[in-house]
Image (tube, rainbow, N blue to C red; front, side, top):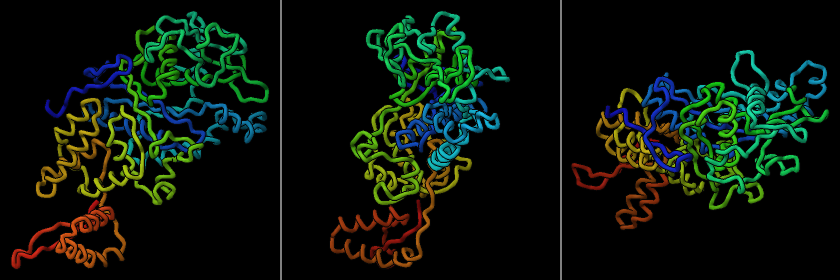
Amino acid sequence: MADKPVLTLYNTLTRSKAPFSPIDPANVRLYVCGPTVYDFAHIGNARPVIVFDVLFRLLRHVHGEAHVTYVRNITDVDDKINARALRDFGRDIEAGTVSLNEAIRRVTEKTADQFHADVAALGTLRPTHEPRATEFVQKRQDGRADMITLIERLIDRGHAYQAGGEVLFDTSWADYGELSKRNLDEQQAGARIAVDGHKKNPGDFVLWKLSSPEEPGWDSPWGRGRPGWHIECSAMSAAYLGETFDIHGGGLDLIFPHHENEIAQSRCAHGTKVMANVWMHNGFVQVEGRKMSKSEGNFVTIHDLLETEIFGGRKWPGEVLRLAMLMTHYREPIDFSVKRLEEAERLLAKWPAGEAGEGSVDPAVLAALADDLNTVAAVQALHALAHKAATDPAAAASFQASAALLGVKPKKAEISEALEAGVESIIQLRLEMLKAKNFTEADRIRDDLLSKGIRLKDGKDPATGERVTTWEVKR
């Protein structure tokens, strides 16, 4: 059917684009690495959330809402989080009145809640499941996959070993490096672990590490300790999506070591040929042309952008932040700047507000998204459709349906009484600029009003033939 295109996706594993064919069309399965809820999510964290929200929407459009399962985890197993939980609730944990998991949840409740509020403001749908890592450390009563069971399997199958108070994965496994295309000699130790003499190979990474009496931990067959970083996603993806699933997504920075190690753990634990059939990664985010970091002074959170004036001297609506991200292809690097946000805001101001209703998604928008999530082309097609929407009800309905597929919802602006009272005098000033052929200033006035939610429409008085300008509140 024309409305149900064949998706083509770029697969990091094969370094090529290919038609997407789900394992089970009745249950298309997507996993994306979620946030570590130690601190508020920054603008770099927002990009995969938005990118894979568009993919989620597209998969639901093609296969049906009931036939797509989207899992995005919350990482709350982290040494900093654990230490804070022990500091704040150590006595309660020791007394048995509060479990370690409960203490961690209390510590991370604020940041997790803020993450949910932030991404909701960006127009994202909630995933089907959002498991927390702490809930999958030990064996579960419901029989879902867990970290300890996976580690036991890896040891039993000869892919992991105990040494130096740790359980380590043996990266001499033949297929290690298939995602990042690195050979064993090029491997470096995984994140959060130093190269130690007790390793068989420098790249061997931690599956389990023992905790001292002063450190938080969980009971395990190898002693009281805590899991390494990578094992959590192998457990949670298997718990909800099975040993092999359709698509695994995340940021480009996760290819190595995180996703490489996930593949190794999962394949060796389950004896499968693949963990996920398609691996998708979004590009890096810079801020005003520089790598984002606190030392550079350009570290900005989603909350900062939504609720403070530290970026560009003003607050930015969530729909503007979302569109600014979608104006660059997901695999390309993006320079997040005030200029980009202003461009996105001007574009939104030109689009009609409304509800999705019963319209059909525009074929050009759908074809663009079906081509490896080409949101750049989709936005261009949407903009062309917006011009038709002013005079064509069918185009207007199609515009709203197409915008909804992108997760973009243009809103009618609320303008101040003072601005509304002064619009006519501003229009008269602009007409004087046009008469004087000062088109630069006239355009500046028009664009300024548009950025504030007021759209001008030039025309001629049919009786006198003189230039007239009408206005409406739009966004």
